[in-house]
Length: 339
Image (cartoon, rainbow, N blue to C red; front, side, top):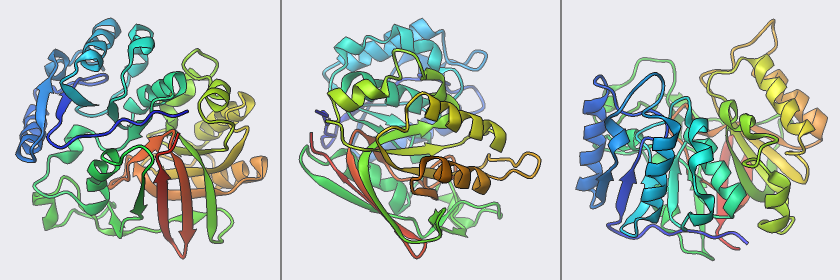
């Protein structure tokens, strides 16, 4: 059975840098995000690592793990959120006390998605793939990103619907809205399927940034089969994956690795978020990767969805039962918070 935390009004947000902290060049951005959350009625508790930055991480893995454990045990904290992602969260996994994790939300994406997936696989407690604190610093928040509050406030047994964004951040120069919002939205959003047809699929959500979650395959932190039998009742899995900066050949290798490890067994479909990576190699494109995967697994594959490193992004809950529909380039994700 899956356990769902709930975000209470006026909750205290515990901010710990499980990956990167705020260096001198980004401290103003981080402080702005903290002040914005306080203006919105949340308390904010800052851990020591948030202002640390040393060689691709905020602090040694043991320190980050200990700090996370302390925030998890702090009864005043209702949600744990990072400043942003990073590179070396994997170093702290061995120092997390998974037996003492409480049902409170952990929110983030990118490198943080490794922590999220490990928690849900090990404990059956739902975690939330969505914006980091730095993404919430704007005077205004677009409707897609802002759904994080409604998603995390959904009670156990309830459901929540999210629609695809009208537009997303593209390569064009940002518009004037960037003065009040942390990212512009200037490119039409189109959700796509490999088949080119409308698609509907269902199952328990699991996923994250493939660059990092692939590294727990075959470890005690990545036992998908145990999760499926112990917590998901054997229901099919809907994988959501996004690529930060792998080239297409490395993306393909990673997906084949996941297949060989059994991660795609009992799977009903795969979702890919938008990516600023996916650099073609020798003419091999991301669309080729998606087609190869769909053919390998004989499963629907959807791509360019609203999650990942190209904002805005939905909030997707590891462990939730989801119904995903794509029709005419538009999409809907309905998540059910049932055990």
